Amino acid sequence: MEASAQQGNYVQVYVMLPLDIVSVNNRFEKGDELRGQLKRLVEAGVDGVMVDVWWGLVEGKGPRVYDWSAYKQLFELVHEAGLKLQAIMSFHQCGGNVGDVVNIPIPQWVRNVGVSDPDIFYTDQHGTRNIEYLTLGVDDQPLFHGRSAVQMYADYMASFRDNMKEFLDAGLIVDIEVGLGPAGELRYPSYPQSHGWSFPGIGEFICYDKYLQADFKAAAAMVGHPEWEFPRDAGTYNDTPQRTRFFVDNGTYLTEQGRFFLAWYSNNLIKHGDKILDEANKVFLGHTVQLAIKISGIHWWYKVPSHAAEVTAGYYNLHDRDGYRPIARMLKRHHASLNFTCAEMRDSEQSSQAMSAPEELVQQVLSAGWREGLNMACENALPRYDPTAYNTILRNARPHGINKSGPPEHKLFGFTYLRLSNQLVEGQNYVNFKTFVDRMHANLPHDPCVDPVAPLQRSGPELTIEMILQAAQPKLEPFPFEEHTDLPVQGLGGIGGGEVEDPTGGMGGEVQQDPTGGMGGEVQQDPTGGMGGELPPTV
Image (cartoon, rainbow, N blue to C red; front, side, top):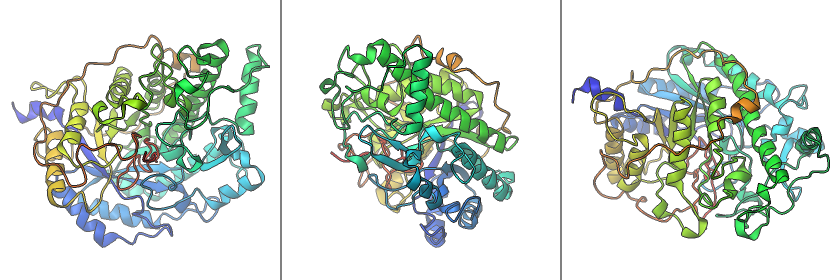
């Protein structure tokens, strides 16, 4: 096969930088250590790195008082190494989740508003506030020294654009991942370890702040049911679906009132993402960057009809309703890509008690995005160094294998490995990782010009929520995936990797630690993902 024909099979590989690469004091103090690690990544053929750009650090001193100096030093080092950069607009807290090695809250002056108005934070049915991320209920409320949450996010992104102009113009920054929730993911904080959640609990609906309660009452009144309330039979964080009347098979989630609530809850999440991405698109219009968001890989309880853990996070996904394709349709309007997690996980590695199906979940989400014409990307949820994990990622990266006559019908646009550590770049782990990068590149030489990013175009015409939801039904069968990759990594298991039980308890999530990954960040959940996420706990 000629290299030119094989070029279309090349999948870019990025590596997430450590959560504390910029210190809690907003200083870049690890230049010498990072320089050596980046050299190893370059030698492995890696295309670039991803980094959290923490709101709590940059705008920590006061409204519109931005300090980008540490990140400029970091970006310069990445530029000198010849790598590309994916920047995460991290509007969430780092800390409090498995793998979090550092604590970076959202800005103190923002949290101070919550002293007199604690409803700016997501709130559960017990009245417990979650300070990781502002509730979407204040997206348009001018509570923050005259600005709304969306205006603060837009101003932050505009300042990033203006201060990082030299790196944008030089083509260093190719991806702007917009944080939209806890762990940087588009979701509700439905499974917070800090509030007692543990895997594989179904989580809780997190919509009890006064702003979201008022929004729901108004929405219910508009359909002639002012008496409707939030579900009272959906259980608590660590319940199983069968222990609740709401999520049990044929439960109250299928009633008229249950369906109305779930539609309202999930639609608000889509509208939240749509609103902030519209601002991000205006900020980066004309720059050669791709916008992206992250979605959490909530794979536990996927095999039960109610998909309880996904639903409490805001993904209204049932056997006859696609909870992910409407999100993909919204993203298409903004020319944005979707980044998903748990790409390394096998069903066989999960506890049967959690009714978990990470492989089917990845297959569904990737298929939904590809059907909407998106560039799709993935991350691993937990740190793995073994061939089994790498081969699962390779299978998901090219579900139908290598196409010898051109680009495959479906392939990932990119993959981000969570996360950079000395453990990754030493010994057998490094040998396995380097082989993995070669296989993702279809055994072709590193090519910095593959899949070039075009100048960002203006978002398309606004879509009504009804237009977006047309993508939810009928729920189509996912595209077929091969069982195994046709270009496997073979060799020894990596130290600290291997086919082991999910250390997070299955969370699927990101693990934020070195592991994590996640999402960009923290790992919160994955179990999120989160990573960017934050991730869930160990069982």
